Structures are given as C-alpha cells and as structure tokens.
Image 1 (cartoon, rainbow, N blue to C red):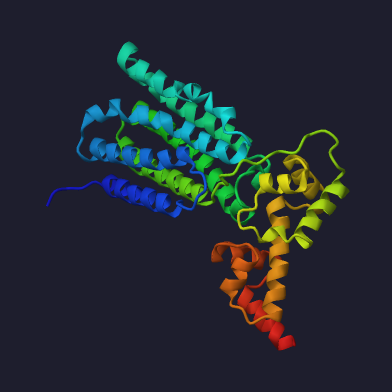
Image 2: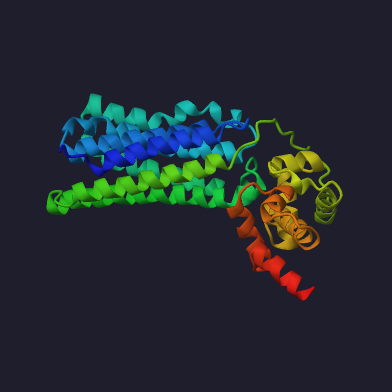
Length: 341
C-alpha cells in the first residue's frame, strides 16, 4: 500500500472546506475572495509539505516559500474587506501586497541567497499579524460589514488567524535555530506539524469569517459634520430598535445601522461603548434577546421560530447570546417562567 503523508489528507479536507464554504455562501452576499483564496492556498501548501517531508522531493523548497509569502497578505486583505467601508481603499495596493513573494522569488532565482528567506518570511508574517491586530483594535465593532449576530465569533476567528501567523513566524525561528544547533535533526517534524496546524487554523478562521457574511449592498456613511451627542446617538439607536424593530434584520451590521440612523458608524460605536460599556453587537443582540424572552413567555412558538423572528440565523449564536444576557438557555428560561407563572 503506498504511503500517503498526513499533509495530503489535510489538503483534501481543506478542499472540502473550500467547497462547503462556497456552497454555503451562495445567498446573494458578496464573497470574500481573499479568504476563499487563502483556503485554497492552504490546501496547496499542505500538499507541497507532503511532497517535501513525505517523499523528500527537495525541489518543492523553491515553490513552497513563494506560496507562504502570499498567506499573510491574503489574511490581511480578507480582514480589510470586513473592516473598511470602501474596498477600493486597499484594492490599489495589491501590488504592494505581492512584494514579499517577489522578494522571495528574487532571492531564489537571482541572488541564490536561500538563507535570507529565513528572515524575510518570519518578518512578513510578524508584520502582517501586527497590521491585522491593529485593524481589530476596536473589537467586534471594527467589523463594519459583518452582521451583529456573528460579529463576536468572526472577531475571535480573525484574532486567532493573526496569532497563527505569529506562531508560524516563531516556528520558522525555531527551525532556523535547530539547523544552527543540531543541523536540523528536529526540523522535519517541527515544520510538518507546525505548518499544518497553522494552515488549518488559518483556513478555519477564514471559513468562519466568510460565513459571517458581508452585505452586498453599498452602505452610505453619514457625514462627519454635526455629529450628535452620545445621549442623542443612543436615543436614535434605541428608537430604531424599539419602534422600527431594526434588530429583526438578520444582516444588520454597523454600516447598515449608520445608514438607517444617519449617524456615522464610528460615532455609534463610541457612544454605545462610552454610555453602556458594551460593543454595538452586544447592545443590538440584547434587544433581540429581550424580544425572544417576550415571545417565549407569551407564545407557543418553538425556540427555532423565535430565533429567526428576532434576527438570529444560527442556534449557536442565539444560545450564546441568550446565555450571556440571562445566564440560561432559552429552554431553561421558558421552563422557569412557566413554573413561576
């Protein structure tokens, strides 16, 4: 029976993940192309890792570093699509994002300075990880285009992706030290296992972010002039929730809320954070949970029906937010309410 490296199975699973994400994303929303490309690239890198460390095909070492150089830019561009209000703001810089790969190709084909890659790649991973964490510094509210329902899970996935980049850089450093101290006696195992873990983490993070959905409609940011006070902002958002029941929109995100209220997104985020100590997704989801509690108490609707009625799309997010607000599951809350009544 022929030997098949673990990397090949990982590559196969990543291709399945890609197909599943694409099928799940056929709902009319715009696709996050960088993240989809990241999943495919991760599958390719896993396959190349299997060739290198499973079959000792040394020539792979001239291809794999080039592919690796594209991983951090793809993660960054995928995050930027969820954070920035205008995709054109970073589309023009795509050539700049290709510079690490160009540098590695130059080192391999022109200068032949192979050892320099051990410096260029970790520096690239660390630099992009820092840039991603900087984009995420405002927490879930930084994800302007992600629906509030999934903002927290997407935020966590993206932070894990940045940490995976840092882990990959640390791994490269360990491999470099291993070659310096033990002539690479542990390098094969570290590279095979470490890179596979990093690729899987990055791909899963990308899949979570993609399934967080982006709105395909163009959101219009309110003008920055004459911004309302925090009190006025909170009153406007509360009016939308209580009168217009805007929380029922499953695709409601910060950009869309800004358009509905005619208040800049950053002002909404800052006002809610300063006034309530919560991020916008938590604030909106609490209106959803309050409505869910009312339906649980006053109707015989199933938990799933109620979940959809108040704006949630997945049970995991609904149950997580319900427990955060009430310290109970919906079923437990309804049962306790019935016993009290």
